[in-house]
Image 1: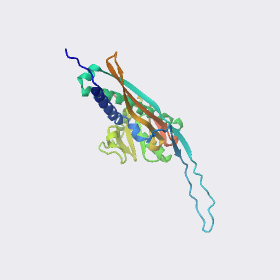
Image 2: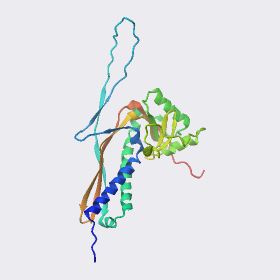
Image 3: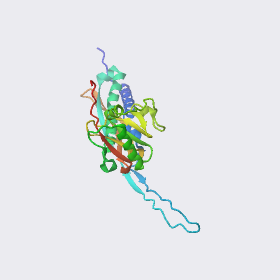
Image 4: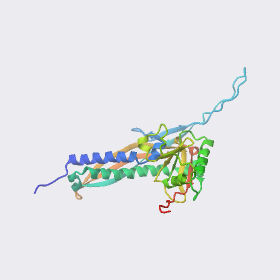
Length: 287
């Protein structure tokens, strides 16, 4: 009887397909990463120092009188570093012998979804700390067009640097459209500067120059916490995007596929964002 084996070439092909699918899925499944500052930690670097400066004030002058007011740059810095996250899948020899490319893509998609969800929820976890933890809205309240406009007014009054975004649970945004006398156009395109390929599935509309996005990774319920924030409010720092490793387990007759990422998420400026607490309870499908 002929003996089938999983060759090194087959295992390498399997890993390539899995890693490619992980990278593709992750990049297209984590919207918040694409709405904040993205920084890169270079080889040999342990941390990145991000500076922040204060505001200067211009003064009226009198002809023939020397200027006496001086400006303090008011620089503060935030040091950012990264940590590893990862997951493991088992590719059995039987699976690899069958060389079912679709199955490798399924595994890659599962692992990519897990990586994207981890990164996205880490960033969502920063929302509640914006604005000193003081939230706009309240538990149980519906996100109406009036409430959304008030949140945008808060951002403008507090000088959030453009661009400014709103991210909330899909069910919260459902209620916004349902209760609005003017339903925003679904054909309105993404604002300039945003990657359509990565964000088009999450983009809803623009209200008063602020783009609104939905994110199903936000915890649903009566007190669901989204946020309004400037791109400068938070950062995603990456050292390693995806590092694929294989380890042989002979007794299991399988190969472990390990995927690692090395990143960190950080609040850069507390005053450039605010949590938005509104209900996102699932709407009725029978009423």
